[in-house]
Length: 303
Picture 1 (tube, rainbow, N blue to C red):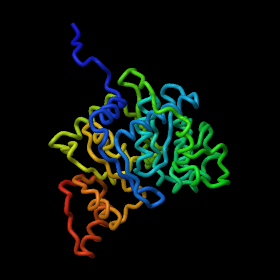
Picture 2 (picture 1 turned 180 degrees about the vertical axis):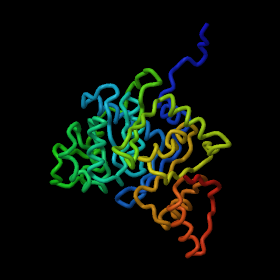
Picture 3 (picture 1 turned 60 degrees about the vertical axis):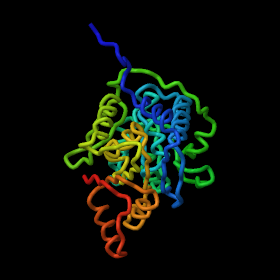
């Protein structure tokens, strides 16, 4: 006898649908590579994630094809988190701090079909693109007018022009919840880097666990600043947990110095921040030098 109560697979698309339906006006705030602050809502994330899915369909990507990112924590990266995995492809977050030779090796080993990158990392892409044998499409995470005229990268398109042509309607497919959703590689300290594959099921269960009181204790009342990179074990699952509970998300982009992080903590009334010790050391040094204090922060996660 099978229990059929709530009989549906645990899929990442469920998270963004929930966030849009019940927390559509919740904010997502990002410091962009350009330096300005971008602000929109979970409903906007959902709409643009569907445009990502349509764009990937237009590229004729198949189920489980890999889409790589080389990007900071920001709203466009978040859209890829849901648009890529939700449409049945595998999000492959690449660590830009690795040596270019390792980045090319990883992209080839993963058989990435598309690589989306922040303009900060254009020099890395220029150094490795000719060595990446499986990548057919290159997307710069920028506005069309921010795309340099001659990068040397064949058929490079801007993210915004890529999405502009796409419908914001998309029926998220249903499939086995044990299907791969995302991929991260180790740093390769012992031999070549090794890949770890996350499933939709494992991602949703992890998102539930993170929200629990004895873990990160997340709710829609929180404003969360994930300084831990989205290319590092999926930012500890925070983007998924935030969608699950409808929390406000605040992204620092490339500005991880103490002053920049403090400005976001204070201005966006951040209640939970997550990052590595080196970031907090810079933040605490900034507080000490300026005689500042935390006005809203209640919890930190350090790893």
